[in-house]
Length: 218
Image 1: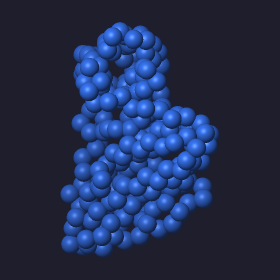
Image 2: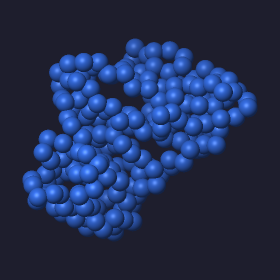
Image 3: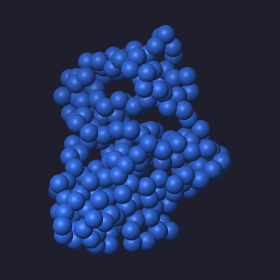
Image 4: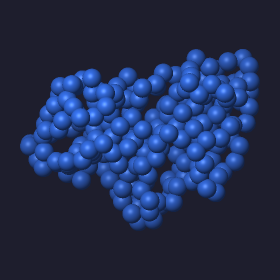
């Protein structure tokens, strides 16, 4: 599953922010929880125009653990059953809409990602992407440790080589741009040549911690 992080040039095919709205605290939210506690995670969608905006959200990826209780609210309603898309209430100038995810891991450690398109109602082709990368009971690798991990060559035409500090055992999971698992394995080598060209996420896990890297298959 995917922790969060990330997502721009080498991430999803379309991640450019619309000039009409921006995101706070940003388009990617990384959240961590206790396995026996609740989590509250929110991204605001700020109207950057002088006019009212009509916005729609669409879920495009969901890798949250099945055991977790996960609910979604927007600036219209909190949904009992999570839908795949919905229109938001009109957003006035200098105001904001939001997507809010509440989670209860139920003492089950794990991690997952929710991906959404945000776009002006009726124009899904001109979307921006936001991501909630959530984990419970798992510690992320520090930026210092992450800088010591090597993933090369990147971009690649197929072969990919991985190096972690001190040559410790590790596992990896490769996700496509929609958060679906493409490959799993362990050890320093993998091959993307049989996969469609495009952008992927590579999650490396060792020492009971994990880090995520964007990978491009040319």
